[in-house]
Image (cartoon, rainbow, N blue to C red):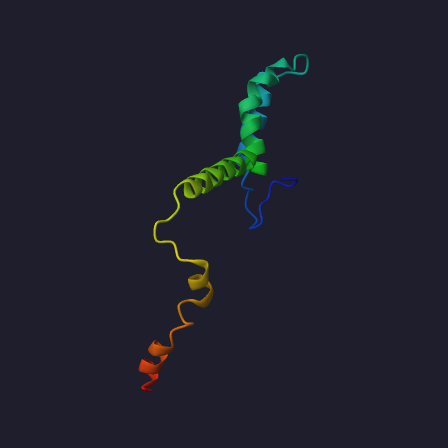
Length: 104
């Protein structure tokens, strides 16, 4: 967000969060006392999340892990065997091939 402009020429996606953070610092700090900046930590956190999406990525990883655990805990009842997946049911079906081609 160096320039504040997005790819399409308008404001970048995080520009509103930056404005909110900047407004918080302007209101809560002055040149003598910078301790008011601690009040701006939630706005700073929102801005960093907009830039880096770390919380979103962590949540997606947790959801994916939970899904995989649930899938491993209860396997499918009618799951196809490895052989049927490999040949797609086409091999060892000479009688079906003969009936389709009309050969006897």
